[in-house]
Figure (cartoon, rainbow, N blue to C red):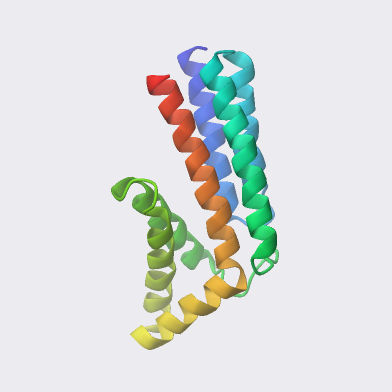
Length: 160
């Protein structure tokens, strides 16, 4: 697979990761489709293992999300600013504290967005708790899974 094809797969992965944060966009399906496209174009054993792992991870993620509070098309906590802060925090946390930093990064992003909007620590903390209960945990589960899949793809492309 050429560099331009890998760049296109990476772009679709990035769009899928951003799509997880946008209500109504099938972000996890875009991530899975990008990995499938890569595995079909580059039929190496590592590519197929990444595809199998992505499929299993997304299935487990769907089961976990069904057990969490429902996520509406536009939850009341999800202003565009808060979603942007949560996504940025999650991505920064994923790289600063490898892999597991995504969870505290997401929550810190929601807290920071609410702190800037509300101005007080107690109100921002209560808004974070409300956000996580009303659909934020579902978004976090899907985003974390897609980040794991994208990380596995990057690892397989560079070292596989």
